[in-house]
Image (cartoon, rainbow, N blue to C red; front, side, top):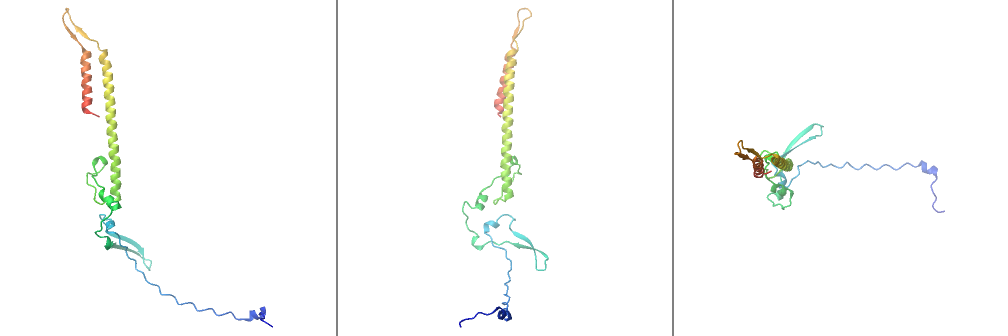
Length: 195
């Protein structure tokens, strides 16, 4: 008669298959954290990278502080860097933290830290500001001197000549000429002093 299907009644009487056993728990490998190795040129920054302190919690939830010395990747020690490498660019930058820029007169370190670099950039800004102040005061002084010369010239032209001749004989004085000489002296001082 061919294949006959199972009735629902028979299917409900069947026992479900046994659940297979769970696979054994895999053994977990233990890992120990290690400090990475860095390129030698990245560690050559004063005391910034001589040692690193990290804080973490152990298995018992206790806070642990660990300090380690950073080591250079052996392949990078003594290696020559390209001119455009950031460390070479920072090494080539230098100068003096001069008083005009708000510095103390000390020389920039060979490998400048970001703080030194920022101080250097701020020094450029301060020097530019001091130079602008100097230019402003020079221009202001020149303007005032020109106004004094122009005003003095008008006053000198207005001073009349004086004749002192009580009995027909005497002296003629030209205070306007004296005033013009004084104004010429003011102009010469302005030219000599500069802005």
